[in-house]
Image 1 (cartoon, helix red, strand yellow):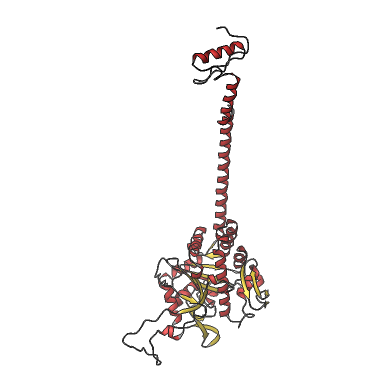
Image 2 (spheres, one colour; image 1 turned 135 degrees about the vertical axis):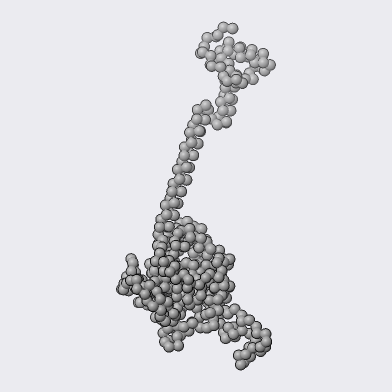
Length: 446
């Protein structure tokens, strides 16, 4: 058959594809004859209609002949873009981690001093429980602290709290130790390298003359409880922590005007931030009877509300709010090597989060005015020893408002008016005393 006049024939298509018929009469006849020979009716394929259908099918399948390379290029660029985003996020995460990790100050001098006296330190009774000594320093050194007084090169433990975290993470007990409590302070190394010698004096002097290690050894001698870790925080660190959670709510029955604490507040419900919060926990002379005991109660209320705020989902589950808290916390503390990394602090925070707020309890060690000086404190026995024993053996401590142990609670049941057991042959065990305090679920407005 001779070629008809017209455009040149198209190249042969791949196997299985049909060659479009040539335009013009001869092309139509040839295409029709081929279809007839194949047993298909004329018009079943080929021609302009068939070409349009084929084009539509290709479009439905993903586009024309040039679309596949474009799609592959688009996928490659998308994958590359995602990789860049992932790497950038990982790099930013690592940068934030390293920044927070490097914020923490490690106390190496305390570790050396404690190691020297390892043999005299008490052993841990329940190894999986944790005892952490929290020390609030009243140092005037450092940026922003000079406004609270002249820097004399010394510091006291303005606040000292023994935090006991139970082995099963079922409860946490924070025990305040009065700064004016009369105690035996062991022989400690002073900052200039000299030795202080043992002395019977008020508790907060231990931090001034021998620093953290001397305070830890004094607490361990007083309670028989081994301290696993310690943290020291100053005025500025406390303010930053409160600001990082957008303040803590308190309620005041009466207005406060205390020049010494730089605090002036109206009565009623209000949210305290930074400077006001610090003044609230430091104020003493203008509130209540002016005693340090009332100040400790106020500190416990405030810390309970702070714990409640930090444990809320609005902080721990919100990265934009969690980062400022972590940044403030890591910048604010000096700690031992066991807690001097972000991972260690995160593990501690996670353990605290596992404790229900009603099981985070605050109390003050049982105390009373010192016999020889009403401006000092002494322990109330046997209640104080019972409290220390409960913590040492990781047993629950019962805390409730106004729960100061009575004589019947501490002496046991079944006693007569003469103080002797009604049945001397079968004395009943003394029940666990209930201590005056509060829990974090109550908040500062309860």
